[in-house]
Image 1 (cartoon, rainbow, N blue to C red):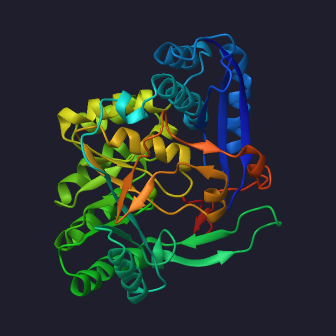
Image 2 (tube, rainbow, N blue to C red; image 1 turned 90 degrees about the vertical axis):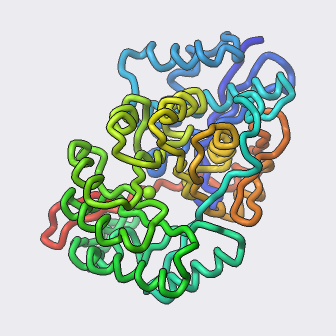
Length: 396
Ligand code: MG
C-alpha cells in the first residue's frame, strides 16, 4: 500500500479550519487529518504541500517511521507551524490504520480506560452575575466543570480598544493588569457564594501577568478551590514557575502553545504544574501526544487538552481517542463548533451531559463532505493585538 497524494482544504465553516485527506493507492481508502493553527492556517497548508512529494509512494502504515522522516528530514524542525503540519499527516495515518484494522483509533492506542471524557466549557459574561447565569446554564446541561471569565481575556484589565488600521487588520485592545488582578478574586468569591464549593471552576489568565502578579493571583484564589488556574505566565518565563508554584495550593495548568516533548519535560520533572494543555493537533499528532502523556504519568501530571473551537472536529476526535486511553487523564476543554461544521462533517465526538464520547467507526470515524466545505471559503484572520495603556506591545 502506498500514499498517492495529499489534498489540503482551507475553509471557514463558521471559523477557519485546515483539513487534509491522505490518499492511498487502495480504492476508497484515505485518512482524514487536521492542521488548524488559529490565524496561521495558510502557512501550515503550504508546509503540507511542500512536504507532500516526500510522502508519495511511502507505506502509510509506517506511522512512526514517517513521523521521524518528516520531523528530521528538513534539518529545520519543530515549532507550531511545522508541528501542526506534521500533526495533520500523523492524524490521517492513524485514521488509515484504524480503517485497515476496522477498529476505532482509541482501540489501537490501548482501549478504553474510562467510559467518557469529562469536559469543561466556557461561561463568560459582562459582569459577575451574567457569568454566574451562564455557568448555571452549563451546570444544568450536565457539566461538572466550568471555566469562568468576565469579558475578554484580561477581563476588567481591558480598558480600551483602538480601531483596525484597515478592514482586514485586527483591532488593538489596551490592557492594564491592576483592574484585572482586583476583579478576578471578587468574581470567584461571588461564584462560590452563589454556586457553592462543589462545582469545579477554572480560569484562564492567557499569559497576561508578570511572575509576581501571577503568584499573587494564585494565592488570592486559593480559598475558592479552583480546578486549575490556566496559563498564569508566558511559557518564556519558565524559570519563574517556582515562584507561582510556591505561592499557593491553587492547581496550575500550562502548555497549549507547547509543540513538543522537550517543551514539556522540564515542566514535568520540576513538578511546576498539575495539568498539561497540549493536544495532538499542535505537537505533531497522536504519535507525539501519546509519548508526552507517558512522560507526564510518573510525575502525576494529568491531561487537560486545549479544546477551544479553533481545535477543530478532527483534532478533537484525536484528543478524545487518546484521553479515553491514558491513565493520567484530567479534563478536556470543549466548546460547540459553529453550526456549519455539523453540516459538512460527520462523526464529531458526541457531547452528552458534560462528557465527550468517541464514535465507534474505524479510524477517527470522521468524514468531511469536501464539496459542501467549498461553500465556505477561508477568510484571512489574525490574532488580536494587545498593548498596554501607554502603547507598549503586550501579549494576547
Ligand atoms: Mg488557554
